[in-house]
Image (cartoon, rainbow, N blue to C red; front, side, top):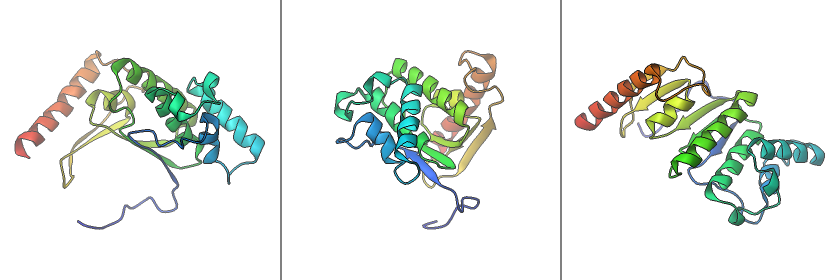
Length: 188
């Protein structure tokens, strides 16, 4: 289809995390987070919420820094904090961990889960990394190549943040997801 609509999303507010951080280069870490709150809160409340989020993503010593002064992982943490600052119903995350080294990715997953556990908003997390999906998702949906259709979907019963990729459960689920992807690649 060339057009259409999604049911159940009327009157829902969204925030978004891009593959690459989309921070305003002329604003500091604090200002980038406060920027999305301008109409929502008074100045003191904005500052407090920004400070809380900066602390949650472990960037408290960098609040006055500009994006150009931060590493890629630090910029992505600011982007994630900013998405959680927006009073949205749903957070869309488009491969926010793409291209990061394993150690940094592991840390960002931890930071993301810590913030999400305190917030519990719905997050739609797009990734091509099966292990990311298994570590972060409560439900995993595998889509085919364009035009997209659902190849398989599964629930992950074990709570996120406690999962180990080496557990028998996740190994089995990973195998099932990989088989669906392999089958799609052979037929597509």
